[in-house]
Image (cartoon, rainbow, N blue to C red; front, top):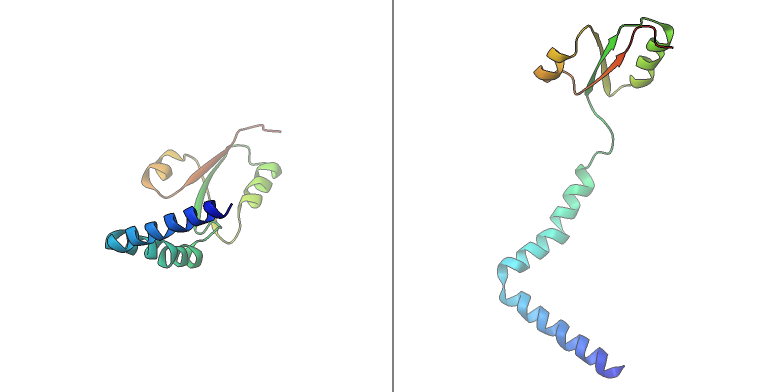
Length: 104
């Protein structure tokens, strides 16, 4: 057991000398464990912001209005349109949903 620990210690010291001899690797390690972690932790957003959803409502029923209301919230813009192709190709909608006529 003692020989294993001595071997691990010797290998660890060898790796520290290797990193010290390679300044680029040292900079990358310091960057990875400091700034990169901080930047992701403070800048990551887990929710949707300013999404635009196009809904083609061919049914015009209470059910289709309820579906649109469920999707809508403060961070999602709902646009009721007749055709989504132009909106999707133009980048004005990131998602689309269709409600077929007589959907029950």
